[in-house]
Image 1 (cartoon, rainbow, N blue to C red):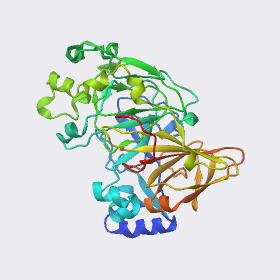
Image 2 (image 1 turned 45 degrees about the horizontal axis):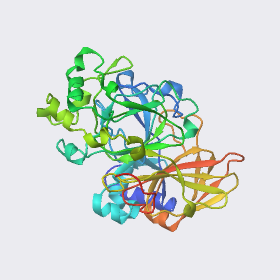
Image 3 (image 1 turned 90 degrees about the vertical axis):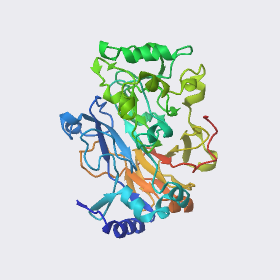
Image 4 (image 1 turned 120 degrees about the vertical axis):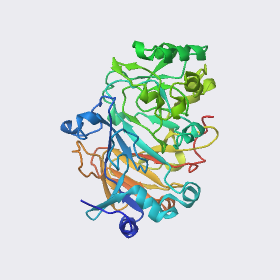
Length: 410
């Protein structure tokens, strides 16, 4: 497939935008992680989980409507970036946003950020990952990056099996001291540094989710997770061993100024202490889906699955649309969205939509689209053409788009 770059993107993006009537077709974006084991539930062919090479690690993530590069060592030039596909050619969504600006992502987001500042992904592992945090905006800026709040939703369609550890450690037990965390960092090279002894695990439930601000420790478990989040890939791992696998010190300090790589006090102070030791942590972070009556109708139900604010700002939100067999839904949103189909077959606008059974690496699918702000505000039709099977779509939105969403967070 021909890849368009440079001056040709504007014409190609305009043609794709017009042909799809404001809806763009996206191809799958796969991301490997060298320190994790794939959970093998995101429909990639069994032979393709190490398509980047064993040295790069297995593919355990699929990113949606992403203009954010993956922060992996030895990554490919375009790793993490979504591609628009039209008439046998492709170009990155990032280049399309640069070319079309507010006409694609909405004037308010374009004027403030000059980019699509969020993305979402499927996160799929066989077991848990290290207890870690994502830096806030001020901390990330010290290394030329952006902070990363994120959210979780566990789609039932992808979680028929929970794999090895469907529990997530979050925060720290009330009463934990900074000296105790510092001592864990001091023990890094002695084996298991014991950071999980200071935390609490929560059982993960398909069809629910969590809102995770920056600077909060969390060790995600083994459910497939849909993760709307800020457009950044910063993190710091605070756990030295996971299921007997080594976590290099470099993954603790990769987004820390070089002169702080051995500064244990600085590393401890990165944590938002008040939120980590909150005795009502679940009340402040756990999300149950809520039906949006205003967005639902005969034969279809729209639910809020990610909502709330981080430090007073709505940075992202997400909904789950279910369209019953034979039904049509007219959807109107306040702004642009990235959409993935997780069940069924149908159409969105004039584009076919189908959740595949299995995907070969590099193969095109018809399960992912990007809906422009203008088309979202005018409305678009989603129709279930899949016989007896419901059509289920997940869609996420950018900052400040849904002030009518349920109130939650801090």
